[in-house]
Image (cartoon, rainbow, N blue to C red):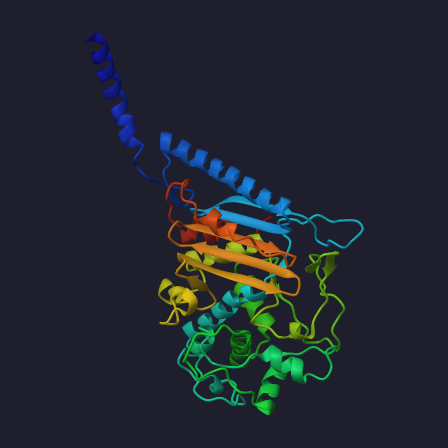
Length: 405
């Protein structure tokens, strides 16, 4: 009886502490569980999550991953690391660094879409506008800005057209050259406007030209002044061949792309198609990509009512269980996840936003090795989750995005 009484007294002493641990407070601008046990559990889970990520990505590195990675959960960076070399062909190897910029390839499209959305918010275009309002020389009727964003224009591929008709591949092929060639050759469209979802780089190349025609600025300048600089994305830029008379042998970057062959890696050479912007050719680091992610989460560039358009499926048919918003892919296989792959001239990348569990992953590589599907298993694993937290725009604007000393 005495033992039961002592247990009861201990319970009475602990009950107020257990109750207080369920309260939430605001900490550093992010709402997190901070009282006693819950604070310790949060830190402990973050440490466990970081260890899990370290084991996983080091395993990928042992199997050939050459690149950088950043994983965040509940508004905090849990893990970031760099594996391998900037130039795999150099005699003296230079290790990759976490702030190195890689070519984003098709992951550039989410930024092009953001630029178009910003112009729409300013009243300078409407998603229902005919593209020929801005590019009158385009020889196809009934194609809207929205259809370009959602890959529903039915337009033909510009790279195939250029490969068949560009006379000298030592001379850069540009957006304006692409439009002129389409106007002259009038290639057969893939299908009627808005008939079907068909992922095609020409859509976002034309959107970059729309930005230029509306603003009177070069696309790379508009992106720098309106997105990269305001978010302090200091390692991000659009590569431009605008003033180049000839295609350089290699792209001027410290992190070279590599094609992989049985005999070993070969440094990817520059290409005349790299003169086309909007669909590719942006460079960025995982840290800068995370800043962009935070900007979308906190609506730092656009209000939520407009930003949310990015993540709405643009097609009713879900072709092959896949769909596309404004610069973001979605799949029925991974509900509530918005993502994009990049693959071009020696680079591969993957960006994933898990809206259901408040997770984010950026993986940039400078080889053509396929990114393992195990990455999806990693980010989908909910056996270990950090305590729920919400984003505070003021906190992120004043800390994460502020100029660093």
